[in-house]
Image (tube, rainbow, N blue to C red; front, side):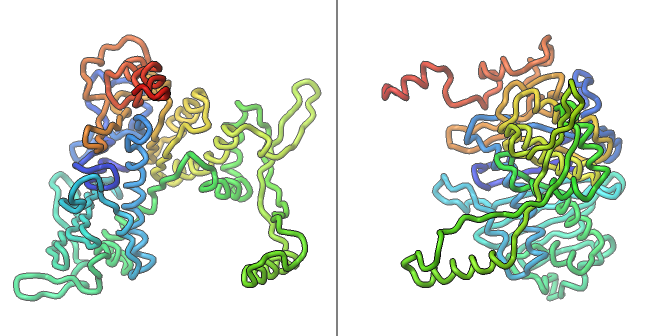
Length: 445
C-alpha cells in the first residue's frame, strides 16, 4: 500500500509537494470507516483506501498522476533496456531562470511483505545524482543503500545483494554495471536481489490510466470478460443496476477504408506501401473483439443483444473501467485514474467510488483526479481523502488536504462543495463569477 509520495521540480511542481495516504487519527474523522485499512504498525494506525484530488483546469492534478507514471517508467523501463534513458521523462519545472537549480526528485513510502520501504531518486541534467532505499522492519528505519552519482554506501548485513555490483576504492564503494542514468535498484532487481525485487514489484502494481479515453483499458476489459468467468459474474452484478442482463464478446472483421483501385497516390513509395498493405489485408483478415450487451424486455421477458457502441459514453466508460477496477482489487494493486469524472454523471461517479470501497477488503488503493464538485461529499469521502491542487502566483502547483481547514470540522451538512466553490479552500476555477468571464470574452478584461 502507498503510504506517502512526494515530488519536486517536475512539470508544474517546483517545490517539494506531498500526497499522504495516512488516515487522520482525529476523532472528528470517525466516519466512513470502510474507506480506511487498519495497519497498527510503524506508528501508523490506518491507511486510506482511496483519495481524490480536485482543482481548476491546468492546476496540476494530471501532473501528479504523470509524476507517478514517470517514476514507474524510470524504474521498470530500465529493467527492459539498460541503454534507454527513461529518466528523460522527468521534465523539470521550466518557468524559472534555471530549470536545474534543484534536482527532480521522486520518493515513495509503501508497505510490502509486512515491512515498510522508502525509496527515492534524484535526477539532474539527465543523470541520477542521488538514489536511496530505507526499510523499517520493526520500529526503527534502517538504511539499505544510498547512492551519490556513481558511489554508494550500503548496509552489508541487511542489503547483501549490493556487494556483487560494487568495487571498493579507498574509502568509497563505486557502482559497477550501472550507467549514470540507470537506477541501481533496477540493476539489482534484474539479478533477483530480494529487497530490490520487492521495490520493482511494487511499481509493477502501480497503474496509471486516463479517463479521457477508453483505449488504454478497453481491450483489457474485453479479454477479461471472455477469459475470466469470476470477473464476468462480478461485473454482471454491478451492471444489473444499469438494466444490463448479460455481456457477450464477439469477433468482427476490422474493415479499414482505403482508396479504391491502385496507383492513386503521386508518391511512388507511399503508393507501393499502400498497395502492399491492401494486398496483405486482402489475404489476412484482421479481426477485433467487441463487447455486446444483453437487455431484457420487462413486459415480454425477451432478450435483445446489441453492440456496446450504441450505449452512452458514460455507460461504455463504466463497463471498460470494470476490468482495471476488478484487477486492482483482486491483485491488491494501486489504480490511479486521471480525469476520472470525464463522461460520467455525478451519480455514476458516486456509484463507482462506493462500489470500490465496498468491494475492496484487501490492500488495493484508488486515487482519482476530479472536477465534479458534487463529489465533495461527506457521505462519499472523509476529509483526509480530499486533496486540492492549486497554482500559486509563480505558476507552481501546490497540493494540500482538506484536513488543514480545521474550522470546517463542524460543518453540519454532508457537502463541502458550497464552501469550495465560494473559494474557502482555494483551488477553484479561474473565473470567480460569470460576469468576470463575460467581461473577458467581450474584450473588457
